[in-house]
Image (cartoon, rainbow, N blue to C red):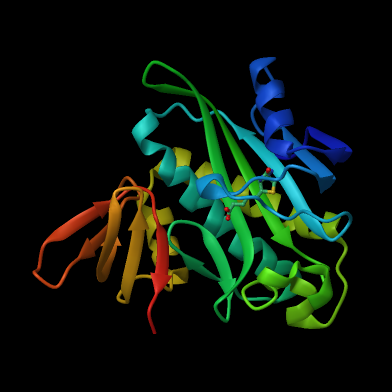
Length: 246
Ligand code: BTN
């Protein structure tokens, strides 16, 4: 994983480059890293600010032999690996907010976006985009993000070599991916739960079909979030924005 690396200076989105490489038959574990993204994208059609030299903007190609419905498992795996990699290298401990936002004291440090190429119901390639705020100072964030985002620099008051953090993350991804291929999702799920701040909390899930408030009970083996509302009805959440009401 991460041995075949494409470095780019400025790109629209590393996701687009990785998509193209995957269609051209790139090997599993191919990684695209850019210094800057002009059209970085986030989940739910949002933009992702990717200022030059400040962060890690990368996309990884995986080709697991799994059906489409299991792809959320890989996103959760990557979230765990990124938490561990960042912690190993920088000491910063992030929490995971379902499905895969990494937060430090409630502020967003990392976002993960999974896109997929599939033939009928089998996955052909997963393109997993990882954006990590590394060396931003407060004023490097656009104003509307300054109260909700953080960086490794802001958490440690130290500038970091991004290549070393990438290596640390790739090492963890490789380890967990091999574990996943050998033992399945269960050990990953346990790790994910241990880093999660969503479980056991009352949260609001804003989905495309409306908003549900309830207790985050757990995740299923497919990575779906289970929310129990005040009437005791359990809802399966596949995609949503989660607001933690503390
Ligand atoms: C989110 O939290 O909404 C996900 C953000 C994902 C951002 C990364 S940066 C590298 C890759 N290229 C993109 O355009 N997006 C992802």
